[in-house]
Amino acid sequence: MSDTLSFKCPNCGAPLTYSAELGRFSCEYCGSSFTFDEVKNADVNADTPFDWGDYAANVPEEHLDGLVSYVCKSCGAEVVTDAVTAATHCPYCDNVMVIEDNVSGLLKPNGIIPFRVDKKKLKDIVKAYCSGKRLLPNNFLTTHRIEEVRGVYVPFWLYGCRADGNMTFDATRVRTWADSQFYYTETSHYLVTCDGGMAFSRVPADGSRRMDDALMDSVEPYDLSELKDYASGYLSGYLADRFDDDAESCLPRADLRVKNSLADAFRSSLRGFTTAVPVAKNMKLTDTRVEYVLLPVYLITASYNDKKYAFAVNGQTGKMTGNLPVSRAKFWAYFGGIFAVISGLFALANFL
Image 1 (cartoon, one colour):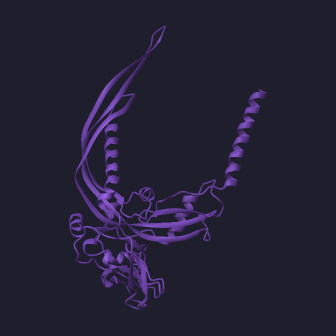
Image 2 (cartoon, rainbow, N blue to C red):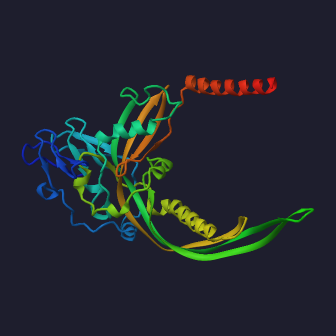
Image 3 (cartoon, one colour):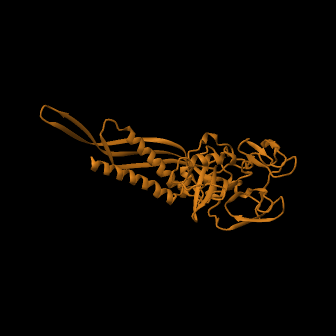
């Protein structure tokens, strides 16, 4: 069985959770709050932070598709979860459990951004996100439609690198003028090549297979200047996963973002051309490095007409993203109204 950590209130012994609102541990039972120094095992542990080279050399292959059992230190029950879980709750006594094996040793993250948005603010965030959506079904995000709200620390890779290359454009410059008899248009064609390079730091890509990549991309950006040294106490009260999609397999996603950014820089450097169509490019990444961090995300699951809808809220900034359902009745009423207005305009035009 895996070893676990629990964080107890020094006053009453009840489970402690890390409060996004207070930036401290809080006890829901006696109302006390505590700093990291006042809670046992909550501070930064002595393990060396994650290094991809060390991990790859010492852990050549992992099997993360099985189950792991552990004993709740509060009630003694055996709890079974999947192998990538790093923090969870005991389903019997709701005790907060941090599975130490998945966040220590070679797996200790390089950093973490603690939750800053607490669940009290989620209601206002969701309301603002749905505001003005004319085709949204009535009462879609009511309590009986929202099935689950989870605060999760999602594993992310942060890549750094140097990108160098060149890009060739088929460009034109158009000039027009007129004399007393004619209008003239002159189109000049150019083959333009841009050369250059850029340094990139902390380009994110989530390292969890269970998370939708597009959803995690759209919940960005994070203010990575607020990264803190990893400490297990930040996980208390939230769910967390370790990575199961390694740095090598996620690198192509970061590679694409870096190369697109360099291409955008090349495009923006062109001045004085009417059009510029890329015809060739050659880019190379060097000095690639990676950090392993945990970033805060609220995951919201809702249902409508037997269909599931997933939303994500950035736990640091409050940015929300996800796809909303469309009410068929509102859809036909809205577009029926537009059709009626257009038909009326045509009738008026024919009458005139």
